[in-house]
Amino acid sequence: MNRTGAVLPSGALPEPANITGPEGTERLPGDMVVEAIGQGMDTSYIAQDLAEQLDYEGRRIKVNERFQSSLPWLFVGGDMVRGPDVVTAIANGHEAAEGIDAFLKGAGP
Image 1: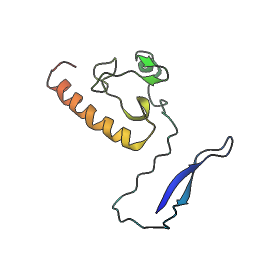
Image 2: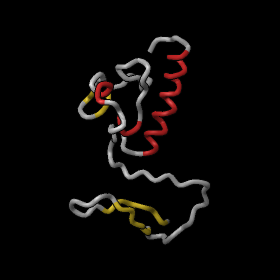
Image 3: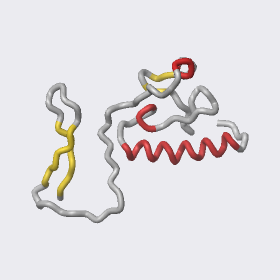
Image 4: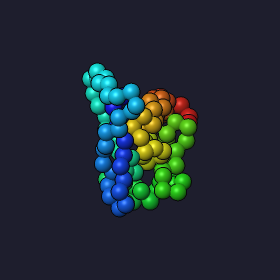
């Protein structure tokens, strides 16, 4: 099977590399490919005054079990909370959607 892995020479940015297993190369049909290289979170689009109001756990934004931040109207997931991988980010989005729904209905955290 042909897999993609990361090759990281000292000081270089991640670059995809094909990895062929002992069984050879296998092509798998699909409708979409999602690339995630795990570079970490980008907070440059969060206004400084807003960023200062958030609670953090280390470098990551602190959230409750429904991915609600210390600002009740702001839900956060993916690299900003956990990660860095696309599967975790998608799972966070599903869990946050339940939290957002509860928030909009006036239910507690």
